[in-house]
Length: 328
Image 1: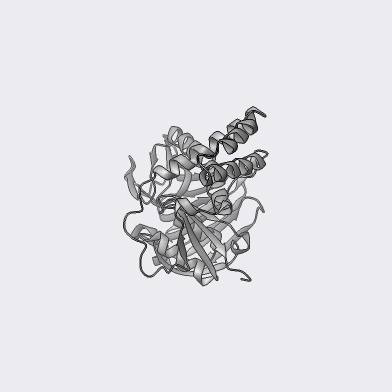
Image 2 (image 1 turned 90 degrees about the vertical axis):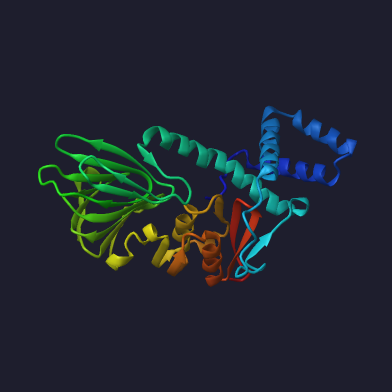
């Protein structure tokens, strides 16, 4: 997740400056009077200050990270910054990011909880057995809604990723809906990933038909085939994948072959109890190949960043920022 940019951003930046002044001179009456004058300018000023102050207070109340930073992550990869000496630029990142989380994380999660029949939280995997015996394996940070009828079995993937092990029923097709993509089968095992940029379908066994908005057919996939549909560009990309690597996340392994760094960050984010910010967009499209342990997402993130000459900075125990090294 990246910090949101809106018309309130300049005022938030000013509020961060005022917070730093107060932290530097907590008993200075002049600074306090000047802040009061700034707050009196408008309601927007007061709201910006309240948001920054709230985020600062909450970050200070967060519990410490469970255990030390693992020894294989060097200070060059993860830099723990103490609250008392956070530079203004770093604090600005933290405030903007955490403020964005309030709108971009908690609100969607609340909406999902109202729509979903089953959800998983951070690093949680879950198996859901449906009424016909089919099983849905939910990845972390995922949600589904079940819509079974007399002639059609439908599951909506509302967020994240799921692996479907479908019991055959010739006259009652099984359909997975993810955004504007539909996957239709009678009996098979396949993986569906829904992210901001699109939907990816990978087949471990059997055959599936992938449909697009308007009734168009994107393709028919069999064992070891994968299809990625891009929402923005409307592009469809077909590729091969080792069936054994499909849904490796069920064993807490992330297997990627030519995935972008942004995609890897999003995958790891579902297994990290906090927010990961990809600060330098120059890193986003870098290609990553490897196998990573989802039980140790921080170490995996550090390894990914290091492979691209980047670094990971821990702003708080629950906020990591990925940056490119100078000249990288």
